[in-house]
Image (cartoon, rainbow, N blue to C red; front, side, top):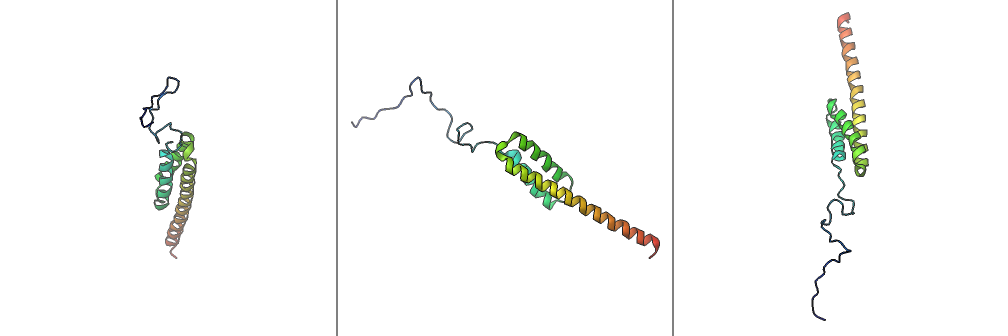
Length: 113
């Protein structure tokens, strides 16, 4: 009874060659979320770089790509898209308001008041 028997897979039972945690192992943790993370980071960065138009637009584009390609990162992609759109709209409103003040200031200076 103290003999050690080695296990060899039977012909009907294929040997598993995929390490645990690798893609295809069935635990769901190895699904790619790179585009979703990039979209979220760009959305957060666009808050601090609100003057820029390029960062929020890049966040929207990458977020849309992530929604189509990475179902596992859908929530992060949606947050990235939402933050980017909000920052783009708020930035546009601030530019319009600042432009209005500049035009008003120029009008007052030209009228001599």
